[in-house]
Length: 524
Ligand code: HXC
Image 1 (spheres, rainbow, N blue to C red):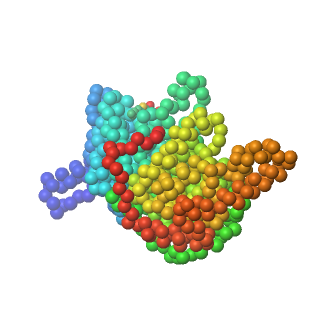
Image 2 (cartoon, helix red, strand yellow):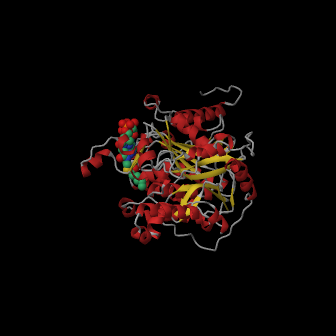
Image 3 (cartoon, helix red, strand yellow):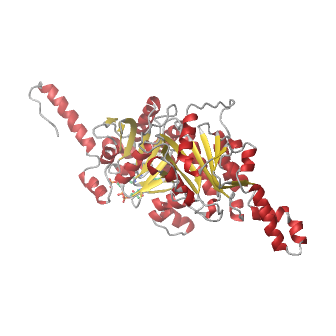
């Protein structure tokens, strides 16, 4: 509200009034009717989102009076705030930069000056070493501005890539995100979608219908369900804007401000020596009895709290953040409850991406292994499991953060290596007494190695059973690998938490230098 200040001289009063009127106009965005439409759709406005995201009263706006980039088709068009609100603020007292697309102004479409506002805060974030959070709700390239708007996207994509691994970048998708515009979020570290009110796709339902005759709704094509369960494009989802923004705040607590820092410590009252007795009944020696690796993670980490990433996609592998003794760790674990925890194309992609994210932001890695191998099958082979599995191997070998591997039960074949074995760069490898490290399971191994004896036997089934027993006696345990130094210690299950905390403490100041290169050629 404009305030009169009779104590000031008239000219200054007018200048202040003009500034305040201009600001009010910008803050009104596309006007009350469009804002109400936004609220009626269950969404917050661009400014309400910023208020919900940041610590109260911490927002500092930049580019407030920016106007659109002009051009013949923009003559007479008003765009208060240029369709995006940008600035800095704090989350739990830590500085962040934010841009919030304003759908009430020309559909939040992106033109030349809109992009300039966004790149300004991205550059400030990189210079000051702080995360960038994008709140996306836009109709895409501003049609009236033509190539200028495409160029604007280019300026943003370029920075998304150049600042990748420099400062954390998080994208909240809170409305439309279509066409080439999806590639800015896709170039960031994390995508969080609001269920039911957001979508992401390259070509929309109408174009798809005209080209392939497929009939599909916005939600079926690119809603939160699709991208958190099928495509793996998004990392998390939540019901409504406020829940999404809460998730952004929670996620940031696991990340450092930039690649030169470590994530913040979170003191805990959970004793570091707490015994994990529940594990003794959860994980039994029967290799065929599945269990949920989530229960193992929750039992071991501080306060049982696990922040899972991509929980509904490629469930055969689990990725997420937790604390151990107050320190953030990234956990990667096979989940025997789904597809026997085998490694698939999607599981490899999910894990590789998570490992690289942890490594670039100095998050130590804990790998929990219970895996029979890569999933066999023509479909997996033809879709490139070799190429995708290689990403995991590459990511672990490339990571220089502290890396601890714990083999809970099976660790067979190529998957033994893909789950960060000693040779792939694990700093310390532990195993439980229930562990078994081998080239393959006893049944398969006996059938291959003793084929002749089994075939030539008068009672092949009895001979097979005997050979399987022999093989199990020899290899179905952790001690062969421990004897050769591939496992550093076989530990009591109930001592897991204490051991892991003590070992991560030992690794705290780990340094690992690599030979010079421009950059590695990661398999893609
Ligand atoms: C400028 C746009 C616009 C656009 C919408 N508006 N899209 N203005 N450029 N791309 C304006 C509308 O004229 C309207 O203005 C306001 O935004 C809200 O739009 P509505 O259509 O009324 O909203 P709604 O019914 O909710 O539909 C939302 C929508 C639809 C589904 C997103 O607007 C739509 O399909 N827009 C076109 C999307 C698109 O094709 N974009 C280009 C994609 S190509 P008023 O004044 O009435 O409020 C692209 C390439 C990027 O983005 C390449 C990067 C490399």
